[in-house]
Length: 424
Image (cartoon, rainbow, N blue to C red; front, side):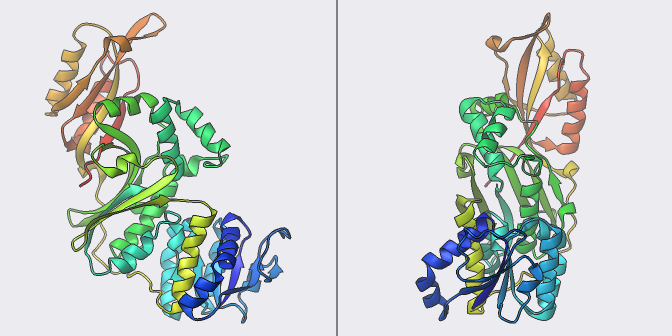
């Protein structure tokens, strides 16, 4: 089995190392060795052992008779998308780790793979070394999937963990993530929630037999979360996580990515650092939790290699895309509890006024935190944070409630709101 590998980055290097270290076991599993016949990259890197492959700076060189599987590991969108399309149209199986390409062009690539009856593997596009795609597509093929939720972005999880453990400000935690190589110099793709949303769109398409569609995913990042929010969440019995969630709701598929308060009674609350974790609920198996490294050279290369081995065994399959009609539920219809951080002037009558607003909108306050030692000063003004945990209500009602609260003369700063997600 001969590979044509596009790219010489960390994942490609990890793949070469695994192919070399595990060569005998791989050959036993598929009945023949796997070799790398061609490698293509924009820049030669002679210091990298490419296992005797022929090197070229032309990606087109991989569409060659001596290549059985094209492995796309260059990242980016345009060049990678063209390579995948060209390879599939030429009747060559493709393995890719490129979630950005799949999120934008995955439906057309799946259609092309089906048309030419060739495999398309993308295990490595979601959650690094966690075998989540194979678990849903193959291991749970006989289940009706009810929900998927989890932590899908290691950068966000690392930042929130640092803020939680050490009280670090968001900017300081982000800077540390960048210094350690967990965040890019431009981290917006991660901290704005786009990365997790792309992964969720891919998982949702597999779980619910739907086309991949980023427009169906509600996206919210972590830039507005403050270290104080994590401290108060702990007092209330929760942790703050950047949560990705897909579920069947009102006979449609709901997919959303946003910060959330997760109960300390749920294992997901204790997934820290750069790790990922995903829970899947099916009507046959019940609930499963998969946890592990969500990125890195070897974990991602391991996922790439698993696709290659499945293709070599002739067992690779493509997801169906003809399931229930997708009507993405409006966030306005969402019902949940809410955490609110309300900065108010330290004056008599404030709590009664806040209670009047909640009462007007028929929202119960499950818990309230107001501490005298939390009094702050802004110029000559005394103010104090009031933290409220509400009962369940709809997003539309909470939007109206927050607007009324924000308009109060007592409120001296921006209210922060985080959804509470009940994970069963």
